Image (cartoon, chains in turn purple, brown):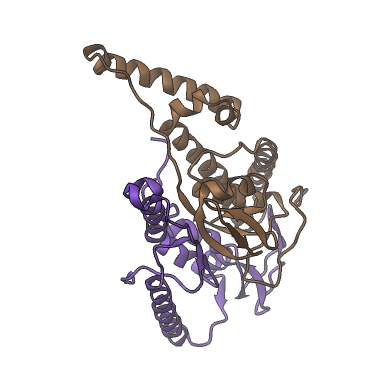
Length: 167
Length: 205
């Protein structure tokens, strides 16, 4: 078969989103020298021992794994637990926003949502909107009501998430 | 080495939430990849972009091979190769998604001039062979035994998520216009915003 992604699934896999995120720049502290890196996307370095450098995340991970550099994060456990907290709060807000979604919505706006969060809510949201659309179409209504229906469309604002957070 | 050979829309990132509008070829490739993944139908083949990227990656591959042979700074070279692999992944995945869509919609694509013209020459050959194989298969296994005709089914409205660039344009849903703001993320019916995606004013995510 030509593809790997499941057409009925979430469009992007988490790994693919990570791949995109890996281009973000982070700071590392190398423990060796290296000449300028001549990449397709730009030039990085040169690297000098103990001098902080800005590199893409994927490169930082690769260097760290080889023992050629370390990250600049003072307290990893604290950072992890903070991220976990933020994730939980955000998911909760997305869920609250989702609950407000009414059958009148034909489009929704999601402010400040991250790519990974979008990817998680995507199947639910897309299917919900599709269902609203189908149920809202005139063919679904009995003849007597057809003339009276007014299509009102509301752009709901707020965070969105599935009703049960993925853990 | 020419790094920024892209012909992007030129507008740089705005102060709002992180959607960067592509300028370099790699960024354009990423955007083409994302759009193709998220769109329910096949999009127009990015002839020039793919040609440029293919030439670029071929050149880098040669350079990497040379440097490897000469034993120059192996770590540096192996990192260059990693970066090259990342770009190649995007190209391959882009082509793969399109092939997947062609396989899925092979009959519709053949029947619609608009869809057919979105394929590259090679893709068109692929589509033709696919359809021929499928027709033959259906014929032999089922159709010759039934008095029936095959039907192709069309996707109607499908919802996708996307970012918008333009300041407050009106997009019609099924009658009433919706205001869209720049750099916001919307979950919206694909058919409403299709022309915006094609013109590059809107990206799918």
